[in-house]
Image (cartoon, rainbow, N blue to C red; front, side, top):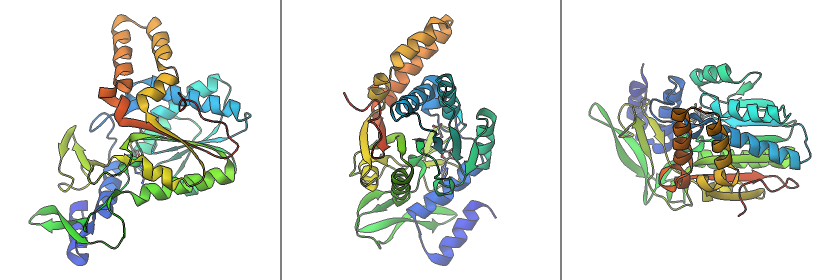
Length: 324
Ligand code: SAH
């Protein structure tokens, strides 16, 4: 039975399906059955090696100032493994060889990651990763894929309509309103709990806002916006990340930012990195490097919508890129 038939049977049996359950079911199928990067959407590490390299430099700097302790580098939702490969290359040059743990549920993307990252261990959830070492955790465009709920007076759900599906509402069983992602808040709370146990830092990069949104859900298929309620599991469902809610879920660990991605990358030296790459590139390559720099940092492109937030445990130094 296909996903649409399974969801139809479930809704006919149990009534309209809450939006977060719909989104979780659709995205699990979507990511399990394809590598969407470059087809439905692209991400910063796929745009340029500079992105993963600067993340690697950020990790190396923090590790150095934290006293050069052995640590585990964890990535949530590593996509094709490009960011991790670029970061590990920079870390290796600095003489840093962390344990690498990749948290990924999609078998297709695990295979893509294995082609680019040697010696990693894979896990289905963060909780399954051992907590015997300090951690540095990276999550780029991970939280936007996690399920959201939308509650006003009533709560958004998905009903069967004719041969397809359509938005409906049900009585809400939670005293909270707006759009929110309990799944994301739980993961941030688990990250913070691990930081208290092992020490370390987490870097969260995503497109988002500072709270108060009511509907940022979107579906993209073949690069086009489509309805989130047609062809379940065939489009990428995302919502903008509520950074205020994530900071709140982090409890008492130090929260740095969020700052705009363009600001953060500039503070970490992306312009110098671009200049160094351009100096040994052909003319067309140099133009491509310049275009990637603009795309990652310009406010009208990814520079302002995307934000960067860090969590650090007590006793760890301030992470780079957050103070003016
Ligand atoms: N970070 C990558 C890919 C972003 S796409 C990049 O920047 O290019 C989202 C990633 O999160 C994919 O690897 C997807 O398979 C993974 N993912 C989505 N939901 C997940 C979940 N619930 N648990 C683990 N991984 C998940």
